[in-house]
Image 1 (cartoon, rainbow, N blue to C red):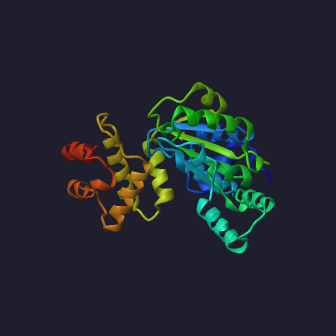
Image 2: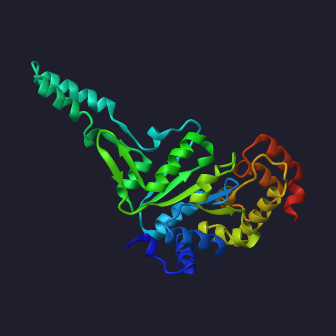
Image 3: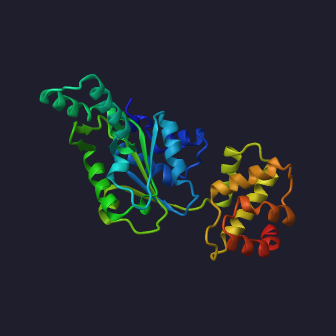
Length: 298
């Protein structure tokens, strides 16, 4: 079955995502469902730790198809995203041929040269894998870290769902992959890429939603402790001067760490001792420690 036809309504997709442990909002479920039905990439922007990458993972699980991830970084180019040649194996192949055919004819040499760019020496990178193995979920993570040239290359691939390998030919996707792009908005993406995608800005969840997420993803955490951790995390996030507010992943880690320690109630001393689970910058930790007493009494 085509994964785009798997769920008749956005509500069905939201239920399926919840079954994987990902609690989506109606707005997010709707835009994700539309991206499936319209065969359009989904671009998700938001603060780190709001669940952008987790949505792609949940979609792959809900659709029962593989997840292929391309992690973007500064300086990434088409080679890292598409394909490369296995040079060590090519050299070994040449040496093996030399050892068996010392006096090779020109025709034999041409044949050997052609063999060097055979499929067996091709290393498929994430985008080529997604085109060849579709249906898959292709996660292009942190696209804002890549440069303009890579963004332009990506736009071309997303428009045609095919790439050309000079030595082999054109590779086209039989079924377009389900594409999720994420961005922490460290820079603005070009309008051309945004026009190609459906868009959703993902906020940090509200108090009740985050409590539900902790209950779903970390059921071993006592309900009373979970509520204290979530309230403390929300209080920490309310400080607009933090370099990096804790995300949902940090909330879950903090709740699990406290449970592992046998903590039943979060107090100032315990919160200060375990703050490194939730806050990852020294400056942020110092600010939060000074305000822990107030934060825990909210």
